[in-house]
Image (cartoon, rainbow, N blue to C red; front, side, top):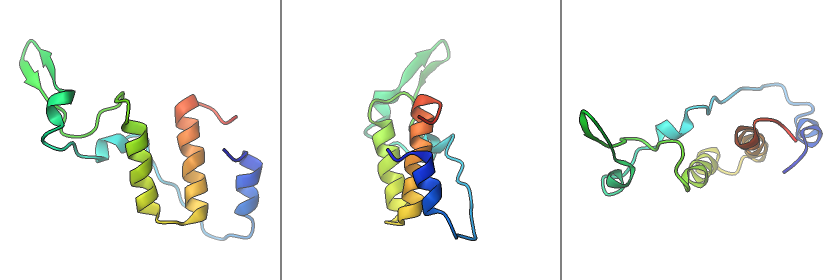
Length: 95
């Protein structure tokens, strides 16, 4: 994981910056029909299944990371920033 100073030094000289809010990113990934039974839960109102990927699944971070890498498609600066965001999301702060 690169340090923030290393990341910001790579952005030196760039003119345009943007943000990508990924706080609810998992909810943008649809569940396949065959996987919905694995994320089902029961309440007093009946059986419910997630239509999108819920937080808390073991493979959710890897699935989200893979999707973001495909989306950013080898853009080095965006990928570095994504790594930093995912790291912050996982531990709650920059180390």
